[in-house]
Length: 284
Image (cartoon, rainbow, N blue to C red; front, top):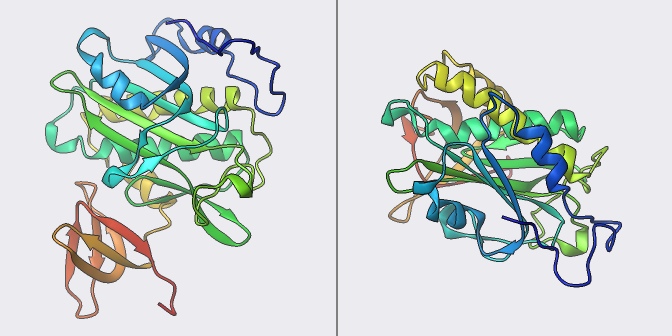
């Protein structure tokens, strides 16, 4: 797949937001023994997750698809994810983990750990995780969502894990006031090439540990790393659950199945496997 920047454009047509250097990234990532087996960049697409899932049967594990602009990106709970061209990272990877099915729920959490640790080093920004797979930064003393991860089954052929990350968005470009970007959080670098390379190498490292441990979150270190970086733990939260049910209490743990454990006012505990989590302030 040949990258296309559109007629009349070049790598230097937008000095503030240049396109990714696909050839250099391909040389650096597709090395012998690497998890990554192919690397393609497209100028624009609806959803990198959908595109990669459609080709999952014909592709080996480790295929990477990146879009400079994503027009119909999807987040959790069918929310949309969009941003100006070349302002973020919109990337999906195809994985085919040979682990027990019961442990697959840890894959998006693992991806969150990998992305957060990579960006903390490469961008110099304090990253935090909101259960299950939102990426948070601090802007003006407030938590802001700057990215999210979505893992989806691709038929019988694997799992596609997608990342949408706001990198250089300015305040007037944010889709909602609660959003953020690496630039607004004071990143030391918003060069997407090294950021993407760091993210994919970190994901390869954590995925290797997890699969080597047969998906065991404790033995691989993923569970401890997630808990250490999770801003949800120790907070009062409201869980908006399927069936229009809500649960309010303190988030106390992430259990062995990747579920968020919430202790309510009466002392009971409930493990939340799916739902929307709202961090509440004491006044709330």
